Amino acid sequence: MMYIIDSYAWIEYFIGSNKGEVLRRLFNEQKNRFLTIECCLAEIMGWALNNKQDFDQLFKAIRANSTITPITEHNWIDAAKERFEQRKSQKDFGLIDAVILAKQKEFNCKIISGDRHFKNIGNVVFLA
Image (cartoon, rainbow, N blue to C red; front, top):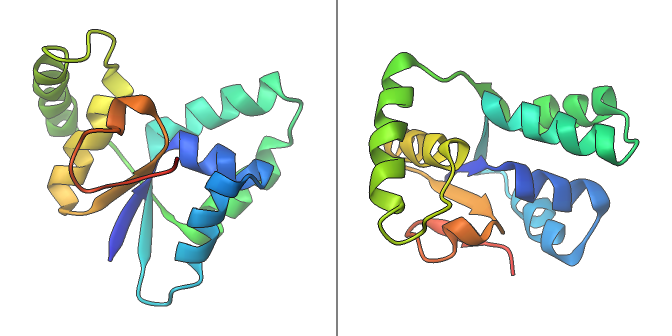
């Protein structure tokens, strides 16, 4: 199975929470492949700065466990459409979350997240 790991899931993994344990277990299954969308790196860097964490070490872990995937111009366009649709039911649905959904459709995979914006969306492993 292929998964996109969003920032929320990475942070839970880094702090060693019970929610992060789900990701740890998925890493141990050989058949799984993981993607991290490059925009999530900025969110993780922001978290690292706010929490006095060494981003270089976090970045090494991200690269060791997932493939960092770029965002194309078509992804941005698809994300704008996705955000428009999501905001019909979630007024504060963000563009980064919409990019993740656009990439999910591109790769036909699941998202791993605990972000409330993904709670009622299909093909999401929701960390609760």
